[in-house]
Image (tube, rainbow, N blue to C red):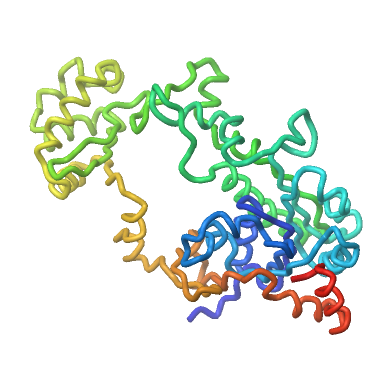
Length: 398
């Protein structure tokens, strides 16, 4: 058992958050030891609680993004509820919000206002398009931002653009918010000052568009949608094996092509054939190149094909389903699965990808029920039982 403390032990985070972007950011902080107080509406809470019931009655998005937090269900539109949250923020190290544009400012909970009142506070505003500009007040759901950032234009097949299968814009914003908080806390440790942090989903995802964006901006053509293929490398695609599975392989240079031709395809003459010897030639003759590879892999079982490709040093991977990933032998061998508690019992979850020094285990706390910690938090904030009863009677808390 590690004796190393978690990096964020002693840090308190207050989050007025919903959906994915802010909750996923603050979950990273909770996993690293921070105390995260999640502010939710009394009438249903974070609307991600209602996305589905796949996790034994709980919403899969909510389970993924909200373990290890304390839920305070309180109405911010009521002055008494807002006063409670302001009291919590006054004692916090970090505040995170992703309300609709302008809503936090109307409540006095925007980063600039809070940091002016609390100079040591790190306050984060997460929005779809940023606090100003012509798009500032547009609705910014993940799929919309994927479209605006151009991700959809480079994802899919030549005939059909598609969105990413995960909420890429939300995740991008969450991870920049997470790293922004860590950077701001480090600065506070040396200067004594926190300060506002602003994260835009559009800007986060546009940064992730690095290769196609820079390729186009600096004189290249807009990269074509190529499905699983690579626009400028061949062979680089998925191929069916004799037992009906699909393997993706990638040949990154001409030395690898020689090894593939000689050791896997059994066609050593292709290594020097001018139509195949260079990547430029293989890309120009992509259909012929892929056909040669497909013909051979179709005669091999998946296991035999993988063994041959690995032995030849050719990058390859199974085209796994989500169910396959949940049973992935590499994740099992590295002991990456844990169980977290929830209102419906223990649920399986993966360890965070950050492996801490000294073997310190991330704090993968329970998924909270709506308002589970309301009374305890109100008592800690100095409220009497009579005041709490009044707030509950008036529907200000749940």
